[in-house]
Amino acid sequence: MNPYILATLLFSLGLGTTITLTSSHWLFAWMGLEINTLAILPLMAQQHHPRAVEATMKYFLTQATGAATLLFASTTNAWLTGQWDILQMSHPLAITMVILALSLKVGLAPLHTWLPEVLQGLDLTTGLILSTWQKLAPFALFLQIQPTNPQILIMLGITSTLVGGWGGLNQTQLRKILAYSSTAHLGWMILILQFSPSLALLTLITYLIMTSSTFLVFKLNKSTSINMLATSWTKAPALTTLTPLILLSLGGLPPLTGFMPKWLILQELTKQELAPIATLTALTALLSLYFYLRLTYAMTLTMSPNNVTGTAPWRLPSLQLTLPLATLTTATICLLPLTPTMTALFNL
Image 1 (cartoon, rainbow, N blue to C red):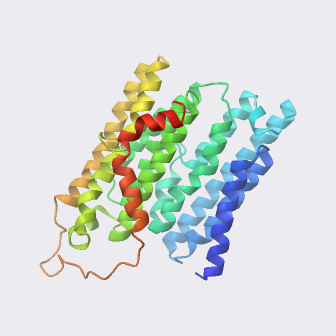
Image 2 (image 1 turned 90 degrees about the horizontal axis):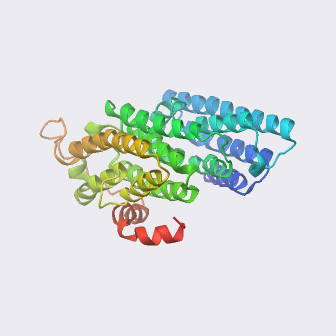
Image 3 (image 1 turned 90 degrees about the vertical axis):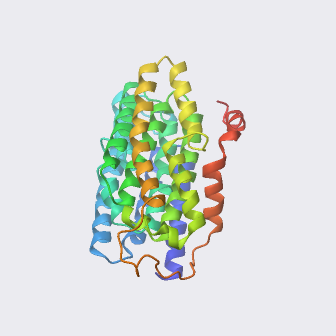
C-alpha cells in the first residue's frame, strides 16, 4: 500500500476514535464510529485475497448495522426525552438498544458470531488493530451510559464468558482462538462495568497489553494455526520459552498480570452480594484456560508434523521491530506485584 494512503488511513483511524472519546453528543459519537469503520476497511481488504474481501464485507455489514441501531436509539431518546447528551440518556428502551448496538460493534455474545469469521480472514497486523484499537471507541460509550436495568449487562457478561470459553475449545486456527478470547475478556469487563467503571477500564488496559503481545508473538513466528506453533523452537527459542507465560497470563493464572483484573472483579462481585455470579464467572475462566494450555502444550512440548529436512525452517532475519514485543511481554508477565499501585491509581 502507498505510504501516503496508509498514513491517511491510520490518521483517520485515530481521528475517529478520538472524536468518539471526546464527544458528549450522540451524533458526534456516531460520526466518530463511522470514520473509524470506514478507515479500517481498506486496511482489511489490502490483501486482495477472496478471504480478506469476504471478511471486510462481513465487518462492514455488522458495523453498519450496529451504527444504524445506535443512531436509531439516540434519535429515539431525543424524541422521547428531548436530550442528545450521552450522559443524559435516561429512557430504558433507548438505553437497551444502545447496549445491544455497542455489543454488536465490539463482539459480545450472543452478537459475537461475526468476530471469529472476520478475524480469520485478516492478516495478524490488521487483526491486532481490530482486536485492540477498534474496541476503544465503543467501550468509551459503554462507560458513559448508566443502564436502568442492570440485569442486561450481567446477562451479556456471563453469556460472553461462557461462549468465549466454549467457542475456543475446538479451534485449531490461532486467530479464531484469539477472537473467542476477546469475547470472553469483554464479558468480564461488561460484567463489572456498572459496579466499578474504573475496574472495567483497568481490565481493558490489561487485555490490550496481553492481546497485543500475543499477536506480535504470532506475527514474529508467522504462525496462524496450532501446527505452525510447533515450529517456533527453531525460529525463536528464547521467545518460545516466554510465550507460554503470555498465554497463561491471558488465561488469568497467578502470578502473572492477567490474574490481577480477574481477582479484583471477583472481589468486587462478592462485595456486591453476587457470589453465585462470581463463582460461575470464575468457572468459565477455566474453559478459556484450557485452550491457552492447549496452545502452550502445542508450542513447547510437541514437534511439528514434518520430515527430517523440514524441521528447521530457514532463519531469515526478521524485519519486525522487537522493542514493542519486548515491552508488552514484560508488562504481560510482570505487573501483578503492582496491584496495590493500580488499585490506588484507579481508586478501586
